[in-house]
Length: 272
Image 1 (cartoon, one colour):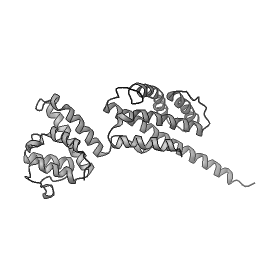
Image 2 (spheres, rainbow, N blue to C red):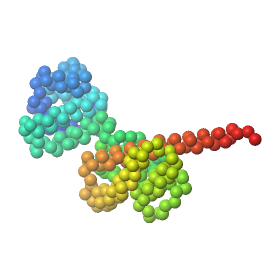
Image 3 (spheres, rainbow, N blue to C red):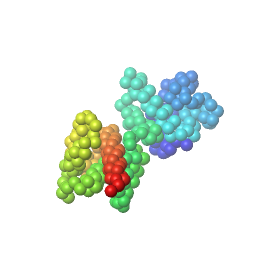
Image 4 (cartoon, rainbow, N blue to C red):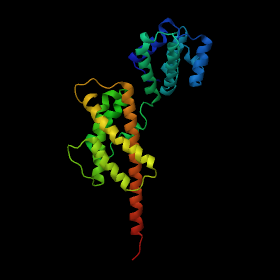
């Protein structure tokens, strides 16, 4: 069953005009064709029959019994269709923009792809605070609320970067800014000679300036202080940038550890 809250259902109903029994401007035939194209499922199947069996009621039943992924794909399709019609003047964009944006967020959450590599946001060391921090951040993403967790994401990246520096005996001061500490760690990465392309170095170097900007987001656009928080779309962008970077660093550190273990094994195998 698709996990859609009462309030979310209200936004979907309002955007699609379902109170009348219809779904946007679809006829029975085009409604069936559209659902089939978006999900590969037949909306006329008797498993979706409900009450008067209107298009709206069949859609309600679909959202009730189908998986999050199928519901999310169909809702994303409706959002794209609505936007194209609104841009042509067929629907009132200004009147329903709020419902459209909310439905878009719902579809992203249901499809489970709000943030790429969200699994990288985890406690990489045995640290109670780290565990709690990672859990709270992931909880906000699961609730489709990335904007409310920006301050905790910044704290996570700070803790993560410091522990990487500790692991490799890289010195830093207690009050040093995140981007500065990361810059020191990046120098270590480059010094290992394990990066195979100049482009990888360039991408990682841009992370220094990105994290410098993240300091400003944390201080002025998050709940770290009494701020007006950043909008949803840019919050998702920041989360994706950070999670992808951490995922790469995880992979790099793993390869580095295996390389180090291999050298130790070779040395241990020597016979004197």
